[in-house]
Length: 629
Image 1 (spheres, one colour):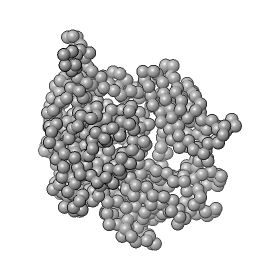
Image 2: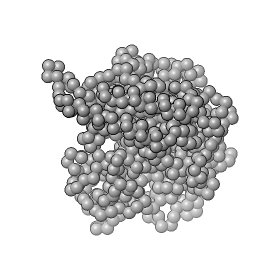
Image 3: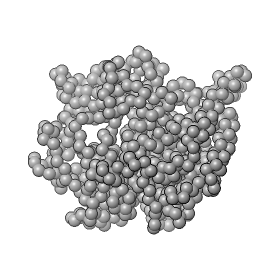
Image 4: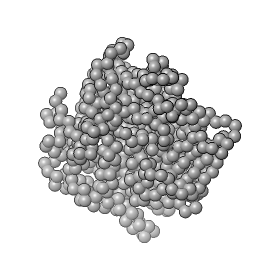
């Protein structure tokens, strides 16, 4: 199939294909937990695509890690499929100065099952395409000489029940090219026997405090954990040294009180530096550096009056940030790239989409059916963008497109999607094994992401795709993280078990159902299509938009402005947030405010004015209501 693959217009974004081709994405991949001793293993690896049961012996060529085999940047651009295995191999050296330390092999993400060997010894197996994992390979290393690393990856994608988001074997409409293999950074890390494994910092804005829980292992008698909060600021960077210590405490579970707290918000994204150290006999034997923020997300009534006879609020529940009502407005962000598919070609490219979102006047992003590398959330924290985080779906409700799937998989996806009703929706018939795997992967995703202040809403299900046992999933999500709101079922099959009722309507914004006991939002609308010649993924494909395809930028803007005016009316009657589809075109889907290769379709200044009017209209209407009381 002929495709027009376009790299970014900005020359800096092309560096991965030229000067940095040996080590793409060289930045430290885990900005919330930085250690100084690490080696990036991105770059050229040997590879082979074999039958699943075949043993790897001879490479078929070279693949550029961390780009999936199906992507152009990988150098392979070949679909792997469920009956094959993708093998990787490379050698590496362990620095002499790491002698006496444990060596960890870290993977940002591998889709889907990864089996790892070091010097022909099995290091471990990991399943799940979206969460990072680590293996202690110290005891498998040779005393000298090069070390051999092999990884075998299998990925059934939409031919099974694994979480796979919008990946399908046969791309069409809103379903995109499947990806297989390593798609985030791989790196080595030197750590002591006694070390920090992870930490979680949770803010209590009402008490001006920060609760920090530290997980550590290998501690000896008398070892001491110290947590230090440092001055940071707006525009904080993981690459900059931390500022003055403003609060500290010793222990694995501590509460730090901040005398004059600076709160994080989209307008003032203030981040604090955070250092966690392990002391032994007064000497630091391990230290990680990261950051955190003070911010609070909650639901709040826009009036204090109640109908006492029925105890039903007369007002509407709104979203509040740091106890102040704020209309959350942003694009649906798919996170796909024409040259890297799941993987951005550079850190600059990863940041670019977020900067554009801010430039357009939005204050939120819905990360749709995908999980990004840690640095994406880091840039949202730094730049000040709220994030609604979706769980990648395990299915879809498109029964007419299941012919290539095993019968039991296709049949179980034919549930009923109730879009505009509280009745009629049915669950998918999910085998218990896959329910268990869903909880495993969703739990791992939440564990690795819940430290990022930008995330304010969890979204376990979308439009009934693979939806099951909704009340149980909401309960699991809230037990995992009680500090954020849960949008149980974006776009239909509502159980009213979470905090948010999320309606979808294309192309114009509408709220066809409403519930006073929930925060009511418009989780998807828009999708105004516009084809820009010379910037199309598949020129002869069935390119489309939810509103059809506009003939000019002016027509696109006129329609966008009309929808914005209608959205203001919905805000006045209780809509607390809205998500516009979408940030960029993706493959055949031409609904983006930018093309797939990131060319803007509309004037950013005009778009910002429209969007800011929408956000500010809630405050104007709310103040007017209070004045009438």
